[in-house]
Image (cartoon, rainbow, N blue to C red; front, side, top):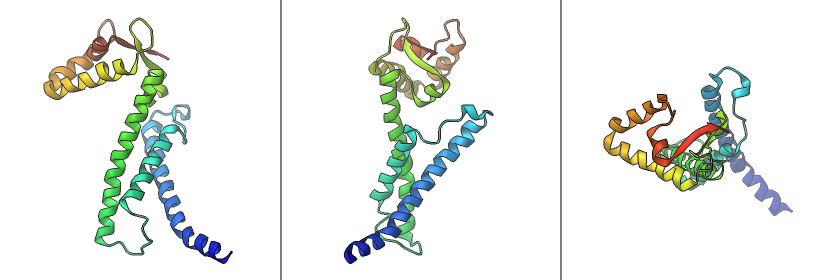
Length: 185
């Protein structure tokens, strides 16, 4: 019983630090979303405080914080190596969150033709005949190929692509390439 109590007592401070760090990640993520979506005015437009994307962000940041080595021991004063680890955790955290949300959005696109943003706006991507657009078409022809063309042609492609939305069909060039349209969900 004494060994269990000592193990628990020694793990408590480290657990408190991990919980605190993840709570701060959650607070920062939701604070940024509140600033971004709170500008729209009504509380009905605000995204929920707990969602799948929030769990993706927390999991990515927790993995990065653990892998960078911030929890090897508790420290009172930050040394230069500790500050380097904090900087690495921030940089790798942004990369991990970006990759995690990219993969999550791809899964959503394959499942329902919607990304997180399209779900909030109540729109989705379908084929021009109204059937569901598969992930290969949406990612390959609608996202990857236009991105590749933009990488070489720059604004010579991206500007006309964006301006085509104001045409009669209300479709951009990338929609025409993939034979897709955006409809109300």
